[in-house]
Length: 148
Image 1 (spheres, helix red, strand yellow):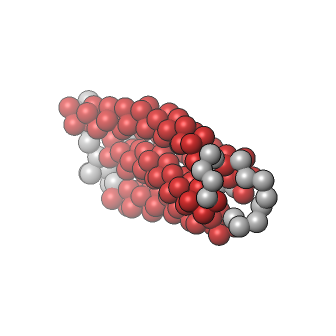
Image 2 (cartoon, helix red, strand yellow; image 1 turned 90 degrees about the vertical axis):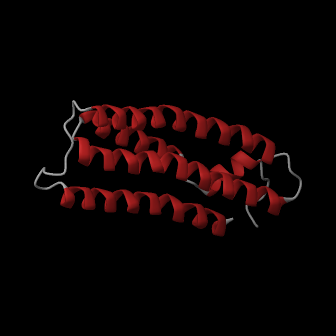
Image 3 (cartoon, helix red, strand yellow; image 1 turned 120 degrees about the vertical axis):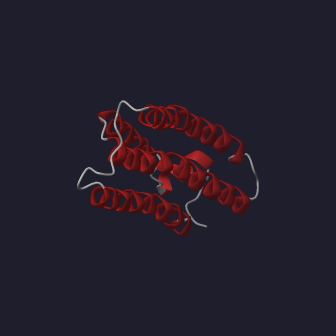
């Protein structure tokens, strides 16, 4: 069980690492404000709309689909299959929500709008709900014992 938690945690922390790298790179690229986009331009409005729409749709969808799938996976008899499906699903959920975080950070540095900061914060909070723990896995999959 510990191996599975570590595998999912690797994805979890890689998302935050990529976010930090995107922040550093975005800051360096837009230090002189020459690479920023006018916030009233069509491109700016379109980009911010796409990011906001992605976050509004992806976070609830990823959480709901994962929750629905864990109910299905908990009924699988084979423990290994059950854990493999959970690992794949949890990783996919993290990638979907985490990409919204990274996109928000990148968009912020080019658009310089508060809405992109809010989108990043919303995605980061959603990621906190996805942090894998052994207890969550046992609870989600209705496992009786903690040993693998």
